[in-house]
Length: 149
Image 1 (cartoon, helix red, strand yellow):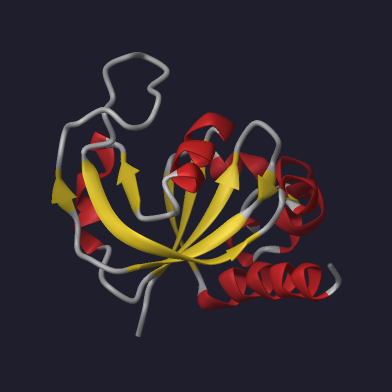
Image 2: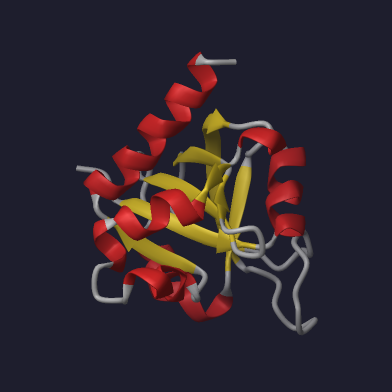
C-alpha cells in the first residue's frame, strides 16, 4: 500500500520542479528519515506555502538517494535538498487553477488538532505524511478542475 506525502514548498522551488518536468524531487536534509521511507508507488501532493494552494500531484519512481548538486533555492543558503527521489507527474494544474488551501485545508483530517482558523499551522514543516482520504479529497478536486477546463 502506498504512502501519501505532502511536500510544503516555495513557489520558486515548485516552479523549478515543474520546469524540470517533475522528474526529481529533493527533500531537506533534516527529513532524511522521512525521505528514506519514500518508496516507488508512493504519492506526493504539493502545497505552496506562500499562496496556501495545492498545484499538483506526482508519483514516486525510486527510493531516496543522496546528491548535493544545487537545484532548488535555499532560504538560508545552506540547504541543498540532498535526499532525492525520481518522480513523474499525475495531475498538474495551471497557475490560475491551483486549489485554494483556505477552502480545502480546514476540511482535512490531518489538521483536526488545530483550530479551524489555524489549519495552516499544520503545514509549517517541509514534509508530511497524509492519510489516503486527505490525499484523495484534494486529488479528486484537482480532477474536477481539469475536467472543467
